[in-house]
Image (cartoon, rainbow, N blue to C red; front, side, top):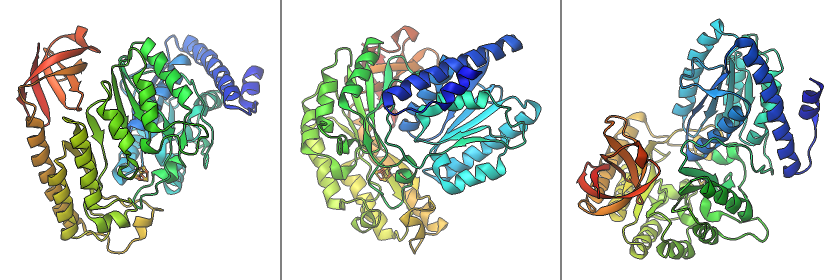
Length: 486
Ligand code: SF4
């Protein structure tokens, strides 16, 4: 126990020292978990439930990596696991409500299994009012930490394993940081797929779109050093990964503020040079920062996928201004056209919000115009969700539920019409597909993805998973294809 106290108390000055400490914490956690497993006569189990975006999905792979290194094994059913962690999202209120629903079910289970450990991390925990609600209403939660100290999970795990867990009495281990300049590399990762992986290239966001809570809960923009990113991708390639997704809230501003660092297009070129990597994707691109250099690099690349996700949010210049997006309706259309002209066959997908404060029918008409003009290949459409603390939350003219529903239905119908038309354009062609999984409904089929991000289902078996194979696209089903391997 003295060793554990030493590890927990150790102060570190550099990211490298911190990594050493976290590794020691994982060893300490493992000895505790092994001892408990010996007493119980079985392995201890964990379950990670992930809400939200690709960044959270990647963070969850790190949580899984730490838990498996500490001796836990995966349990599919969250109600049966010994250690349950929710990696939360707070971008929209329904994500918060979903979490509270899960916690309600788990609280009932914990009454009969008081040694179950329940942990929460991610964006919701950084939001003051949500955090206070958890502390007040869910005293059976054992551990709460935020987005800035995820790298500290091994130490927090030791803390929660070495203390008397709450047993419903309300003694939560809780550490939420206001921010950090730390980027601790090489924390263990358990990938969801052996052949593809997300790679964080930056954290946080400086844009402060007026509806968005991300800059408040994920902090200011911090880019990882390009050498660290390249080293990670080389190791992934050596481990069988063929596709990487470079992740950041706004990848187009990668490298800003880091002395001597390269731009995002230059980073893409370095990734392109890595042997074994066959496909490169990235997410997300803010239209205001998308450079001609990026378009040129994409156009001349054999590896960068023919897909760009370019959040529009609104087609109305007036609403875009209120959203603090820094582009206009016409500017967005021109940019998308330039991308389509320079990169034939590229799919352009987007995010659209309806019901932003002050939105009128005319503004929705503008959004519909842009959907038609750009011919989106896909779009995530959302109803505006008021986030306390953001400028939009206190704007006048919040749109009534009734009106929002009408706006949303119009936008959704137009998106579906246009994207179905777009998808049909490649019917009959033969294209490369990265096979990702067995089809969930039909075990005679496998499911894969085209470079343009459309899914394709075709006859095949598990030996194809992770391979890139040519498939004839025989039947367009609107948002996906049926095909035959050639
Ligand atoms: S760019 Fe805007 S919408 Fe995207 S994370 Fe940053 S503030 Fe939010």
